[in-house]
Image (cartoon, rainbow, N blue to C red; front, side, top):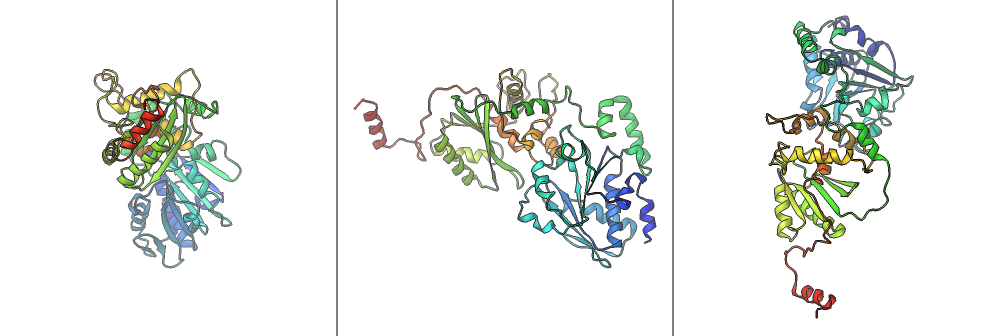
Length: 442
């Protein structure tokens, strides 16, 4: 296959991928712009011309099928590039020795990511899902002289981390290009017809879906980024409010179990756990209850959460823990379609109140809180978009945000410290007599 045939299929807007050197090449835009095809074709072409190590990266990658591996395989087949050998977990060029490798960033720490130090080009696909934490680990790791980082993304929020860090005010080493369907000569006519229909019927959707603008921060947004950022400012050093803990329990491999600690108007901290079984989570929660004496622990009872609740209840913590099902009926059923919508609405009201509130300055938490859009059911009750829709936009589960909103499951009043008696759920005779003696009732 002549390389000129591949070049002819790469739209002019993407020519800098092949002809210019920039530390960062940042391409964004709407549907039909051809970003993924152009990136794949350009990398396959460069890989035929010289030996390169190319890392294809995403925020979350459960398996190779979640990566651009399939797209690269399809483009190799499309051009009949017989010089490429497709293997189970990588792709290599038999002539130049170029290798494509595939990784998810969320679970990479500094040690695990050292394998990327020799990378020539890192392609970050779905850049809108990359967290600031992942970028802070990745950027100094891609350190080879002349190395480049290519980013392709459809903007979701005004505060997408990579947009804020790299593209909003680009430096001299960063190329930023917007490419939409009308810049792509290979955009199918069917997509053009869909775009025009959307432009006429829903201009706001057209701007986001087809022209690559971030989601409007209007009526559809439940929590605005500005409100969350205001809560990042330190305002409190102490509080007498009772401690409430929200516990969002992981169901799948890439989800985190998260504890959120909130006292009144101060959300103090988060603790995250990874890949814990039911008993381990229950043990950890018991330790937190013992050490911190919360007034209430609201835990997500869906999935494996019900098992955690049962263990803690059997150990004598029934007075403190409350099982919450996100899909169950709301307390104020006439206003909210389910418990999830009610808790999120309560959290939004807390953030919007006139009295100052404080949360940890956490960009991941901000993106999770600001990702959820409002919907309404046929009775006009607040519904919210589904968690699957939110995960698709974020590239991960909103675990911290869910733990935070769980602290608003029910009103909690300061009625003194709740008594707990350990695993048996019963007070020992010795402790009972000691309590009577200490209270002067001997």
